[in-house]
Each structure stands twice: as C-alpha cells, then as structure tokens.
Length: 246
Length: 231
Image (cartoon, rainbow over all chains, first blue to last red; front, side, top):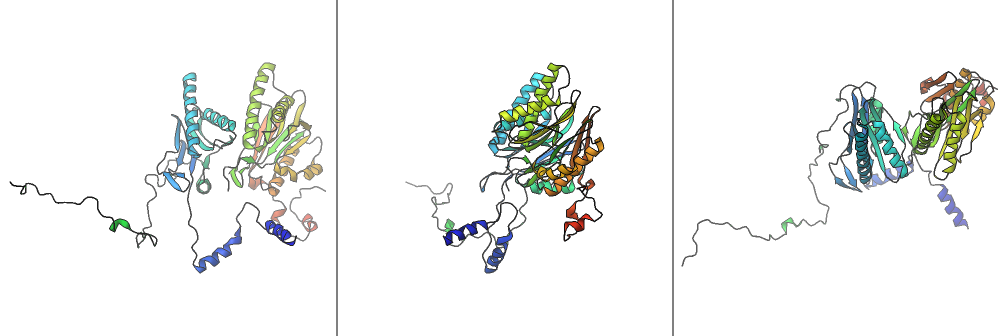
C-alpha cells in the first residue's frame, strides 16, 4: 500500500504540460562537465511567409521537403499557382497542400470561364476554407494565400481546420515563430520596394564552417577504398605496335 | 508546441443592451495551443446591416456557422422584403448549433437592432440553447466577469455608459484570462446604424497587477488608481 501511495506522489510531481521545464538544466550542466555531449539538433519543417506592401503582396517560402530526418527534396516549390494574380504557399503534408491547391486552382479556372472575369482572392479563400472544413482538419494543409485583384492586395492565412485570418503580414509552418519575430520587429505600413525583405534568396545558405581537421570517419569504420581490388586492369594500349608476326 | 492544434479563440465576448440599441464587445486573440496565431482578429462579424455576432470557441466552426447564417439571412431578407429581425437571426444560429451539437464547438452572442423589438441580445452557448438576455457574456474570459456584471450592470444605461462598461469589462477579462488579449473591439448598433470602435492596449486602464504588492486589498482600495467595483 505504501509503495502505491508513493507512486501516486511521483506522478503528481510531473510538471504540467506546456511551458519550458528547467528541471533538467542542472543535470545537463553536470553531464556536460563530465564530458557527455548533448544530442545534436534536427531542423525540420517549413517556413512560409507573406506580407502586404505598398504595391501588392510578397509571398516567400523555403525549399526543403523532409521525410522524417531525411531531406527528400532540396529545392521544392512551395509557392503554388492558383490564378494568374493569386498564389498560395503551403505548409504541412506536401501531398495535401499540392492536392488542395491544384483542385481549387482548377475550380477557379472554371469559375473564370463561367464569369468571364479575373479571379478574386476571396473566391479562392472561400473555396479553400470550405474544402478544408469539410475534412475536419484531416487534410493537413496550412496555407498562406496572397494575391492582387480588382479590389486591391489581399493576404490570408488558412488553417487545416478551415479557419481563416486576414492579416497585413503572416507566417506559417514550424519556422513561423522565428519568421514572425522578424516581421513583428520590422514591419510597418507602406513598405516600399522589396529590398528590405529579400535576403539570401538566390543561393542556398552557404557552408560557412569548414572544419580544419577535415571529415573523419568514426572509429572502427573500415575505409575500403584502399582494399578494393580493381575489377579491370588499366593497360596501356600501344597503337601500331609490333603485332604478331607470322 | 503543437502548431497543428485546432485554431481556437480563448476569448472574451460581451453583448449589452442599452436604452436604444446594443453594444457588442470582444478581445482580439486567436490562439493555437499556446501560440497566438492572430493578435488582432475581429471576432465581431456582420450578418446583416443591423445584426452582428460575437464568435467564440473553435475559429473554424464559428466562421462556418456565421457564413451559413449570413447566407440564409440574405435569402430570408429577399423573401421577406424588409430587414430581418434579430430574433430570426438568433434562431437560425440556434438551429445550426443545436442540430449539429456533436460536431460543433462554438459559443455565439447575437446582437442587433430591428424596428419591432429595438435592441436585443441573444446568447447561444455550446449546446444550442437560445436565451434572450439584457446582457450576455461568453468565452473563457467571461468566467471573470460574472461578479463584475452582477455589480455593475444596470437597466436604462446611455450609449456611452454601455460602451464604457463593455470596454472596462473586456479589459478586466484580458488582464485575468491568459487566453484573451490584444485589443478591444466594440460595435454599437441602434436605429441610426452601426459604429465600430477600436481600443488599442495602451489606451486601456491598468488594473491591480500594475500596483506594487500590498498586504491587503484594503490598502489598494484607498489608492488613487481607478476602482473597477463601485461599492
């Protein structure tokens, strides 16, 4: 009976969910002093952003698609075409974002033929939000929709459950907190030109740290390059040499 | 942190009738788990020229319900040939909420003005009950306001008194409720039309938390700062 009571007490000591628990920081300090290396970080996920500026809307996205810890596509296109004047960034499950934006893009095209007019951003917004709501959040697509139509520039965020927000600047994806921090500190109305926000968009992040020791394999790895016997022997071919003579 | 958590509005929403119309008020925080997804959302949505609603609970559910009701009300207005009454709008919301109670998670306050009944407030909480009330409060922040309203509410207030009451109440709830925050938005509806107001956080009064810690409430009561409860 006593041990059960103590077990219950231990469970009650588990910190409540949410917020950072500092309990293990002292243990980590102690371990690192003893020489135990902390586990390395794994950066995953997506960052998609949008902002409204003086002349219209800018949408931005990174280009990494991941499959667990593996980078499946180093340069994938996360900004999807919806209409000539409307584009949509997608975060979440890649298949879901592709499928939902393709579907709504074709519905918009039919609508354009039907009405004879340029598509409006609110049309795309309503089509996307109805679709996502119908699937009750199982279509895991978080979108940043932006475009310019007859009524002006528009920027909306659409969440997997179908709720939408209309904002002057928006971020989504796992990198959204970091991106939002940048926007919150630097955004102001009436931003002109694009120079303030374009950064590092031409090349992927350069490899700035090159270890002086070079790359070394872990111990016990056999480097086989020196031990492999070549399958073909390279032979010098002498042209026009002495052929066999009878 | 689960950024895929359903987008919900831990909220404070209020609807108050006054002599001649209604005042609706809300905070502006939409949260996804513990991340504030939108710090300046507009929770007071228009259904018709004379009827507005305050939304709380799941953001997706409340947006969809308000879209459906706006659509039905539009048809109804065309068929009726005159502006819809607040009672009809509230009942449409109630029918959707009640008949889909297993799937929806949204609390709504319907407020508006029509020529038959004047200013009216209807509260439609989670299960789909409809309650016509002189004032209604909803959302997670409303828990902190029941006592306040019992004390501060009175019949036959003027428009400015009613709006000041709503702003004070929302700002008190924002101070106490972690899931409410941002700015205070109000909408006043009466026979003259609709007025939207916006109170940014720096214009709101400071409450008890901003004072130095005192030994007892009695010490604070005598201090110069504004007192929410008029005893």
